[in-house]
Image (cartoon, rainbow, N blue to C red):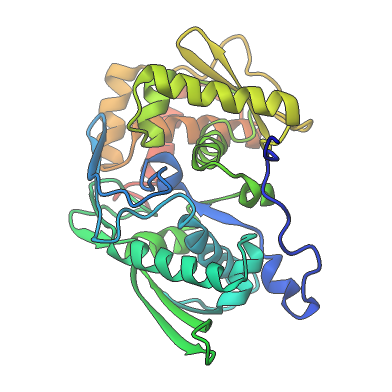
Length: 340
């Protein structure tokens, strides 16, 4: 018997007292949506990795518990979502977030059995132990140090049988800077129902790069690297093909559909309210000259990622751009040390 494409809704009858907490809009930080920070493995992943793109690089090293996984990311998504919801309501936030373990399990569609609490404990260990070194900016700051995804996690209160009740998590500067600078994107709640780590990673990349546009393309080899996959190109194509086939049968992937165009992967939005296709003359910039200036204005940023964000921003605002190069450089200034 074939397994359902999606995880079951583990909490169809949610406690009315925690609905406001559970219903906080899921948010993910853009830097880890862009770069392969989390492991796709469901077993302890002890493989250090380095990802480079242009002048930008990131190194991720495991602890004795292994690298933080895509499913461990649920904890960060929950913390980011709660902080952004608080900011939207005018409440102050700090790097230390206190929450009830039960609320996190419900909000992220995780099991609230004893095993669910054990898996959450393991996730906290991996998030604290995974070490990152990078020159990529997060929320406007550049990092040249080693840091964890969370600085610490403390179980403040637990039941007699060892289940966590209240947890304090102190977020790293990397994560908290993204919150303070709103360098986050909204995620579809169906994200928490995706079974496969690769499905979740593909959704994150599509959300970051396709966004509100009707479609977006990426080379298969580049997509493999951005996913953090250690598979060969042939095996990675097979894994993505299986997800595409499953989605054609079940329509289970939220917001975006994937297909192959030779050695490229085409991402199409499933939403009806997507932006119109780009005009015949796209917002073209001189990559040789303008990219060099952009790197000086926004050191540490991924210039191509900034270019995608700028094009999306221009489209969303309906701006008539007369000089794409100058307009893009002005946009880069808002992300660099020259911002006012």
